[in-house]
Figure 1 (cartoon, rainbow, N blue to C red):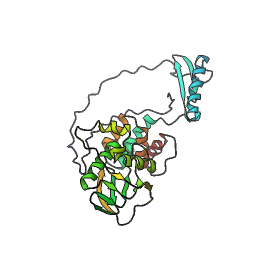
Figure 2: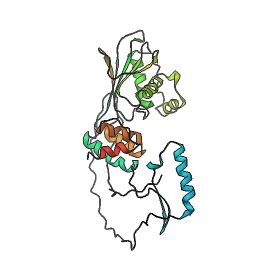
Figure 3: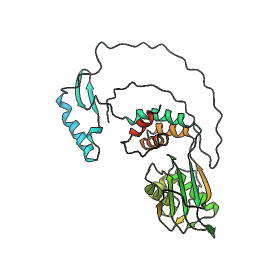
Length: 300
């Protein structure tokens, strides 16, 4: 939706190189040296009159569509106070709803989120998810709980669950008699709620209960990729801390931060931006989408 911004726009060129994240180890590629860009002379034409108009008294021709649009957003649960509209054609103002009030613009604040993330960590930084157990493995059955210690990986999706499920099968686990315990900041499919993320993981580990969405993502994997089958008899349990005396089985590494930032900007993913911002600016994010990125930007 259109928003008026009263801020200076910075044009920033980020040369980010990404690579697939090997599991469980990663080898960073050697950096390449690129030639210096050629600077061209650009002639700037100064306008003879202001580009914007006084905000009062817009033409009534667009008032009804604007009000209808805002009402539709309100019915969907979006506050009109968080919306900004400015429609102008040449020297005619057609619509104005908070058009002169600066509001968080998610796509712009992703630039700040990218910079502060790369400065706080480093381009090769990886978020680690730990998978542990509380019991013994006998005849393909884990007699205990499967414990997930989240590490703030913002791109833990169906493909990660499938890979972990296949690895658990190789270790010798086909069934878990206990619960799936979620601790720490574990995200999946861009859901930060640990209960919801845990339910996604429980489903992703067992191809017998895959949703259509999970199956669709599986079909994008290389031909011959195994379908995991890790049946969890118990429930998804969210715990503030991990149980004592757990045995670590798997360290799952995220993509390098440079690749995460690249994907976040490529797909303009607001939820990834908020997750990265919270990793930099650790607190519970209760602000509107994009505002956490603004908070992180203030640390620059």
